[in-house]
Image: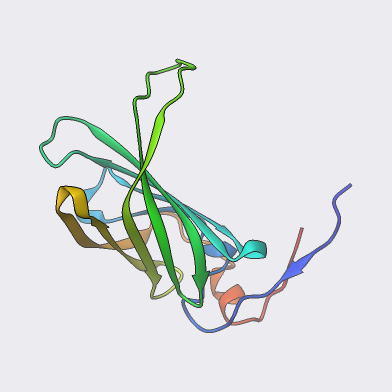
Amino acid sequence: MVDDFSFTTQGGPGSINFGHSGTWYNPSTSGQGFLIDVIPSRGELFVAWFTFNSDGTGQRWFTAQGPFENNRGELTLFETTGGVFNDPTPVATTEVGTLNIEFQSCTNGTVSFNIPDEGLQGIIPLVKLVPDVICNDLANGSLMVSE
């Protein structure tokens, strides 16, 4: 049995809500991107960032988690290393910097990142790969979600 519960957002276009969950990417760097999970009941975001090394030698896996308010989240950025396919050996997860995310709408956002020890920082424009049909209704408060 599933109990009913409802949540509302803080209102306004771009306010972070469950409809922002999903896959996001920069069309000019297709093949890398972000998986974003919004946890409205805790006011938190989880972000997985799939990208590559600056020198082209391999893939990189970053995660970030932290609070959001209105249309912005300021998150701590971690890098996970040492993984081997289908191997239970623990991986190493290290704090490497910050990741800030801001949504301009339900289909557009911006990520800014800073990895100080590597001198890496930048801004990445994002579009949602598959738009969510309820995001705008959640953002403007015209829809209540019950699960």
